Length: 134
Ligand SMILES: [Zn+2]
Image 1 (tube, rainbow, N blue to C red):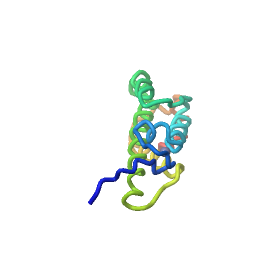
Image 2: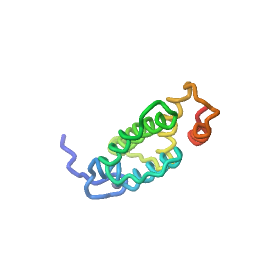
Image 3: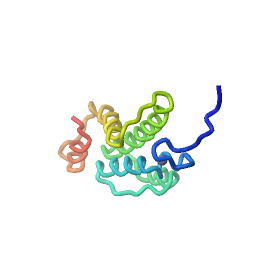
Image 4: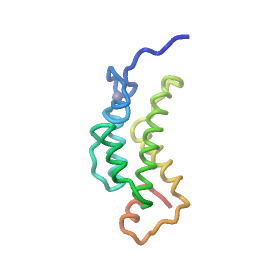
C-alpha cells in the first residue's frame, strides 16, 4: 500500500495537476468548456477557477432554461472530468473529449427532460435543439 505521489495530469501529461489545471487550464477542460458554452449560445473564455465562479455567481440567476443548463452543465462537466480523471487510475481506460461532452450532454438532457419549457421563446428553441432536450 502506498500513496500516489505523481501529480502529472492524466489527460495532457502536464507535470502538476491542480484544481486550476484539471478543471480550467487542461486542454481537455478548455475544449469541454468551449463546447458547453457554444451549445448554450455563450462566448466566455475561462481564464481561472475564481473568475469562472465569480462570473457564474453574478450571471446564473433565475429559473430560465439557459441558467438551468449552465448550472447543470457546470456540475456535469466537473463531475465527468473528475470521474474520467480517476477511471484510468483504477480501470485503465480513457474516453476522448467528444465522448466526455456526450456524457455531460446526457446528464443535462436527462435532468431537464420533464421540465415544462416555453417552446415559443427563441432562445429556448435553440437551447432545446443544441442540447437535444425533448
Ligand atoms: Zn491536463
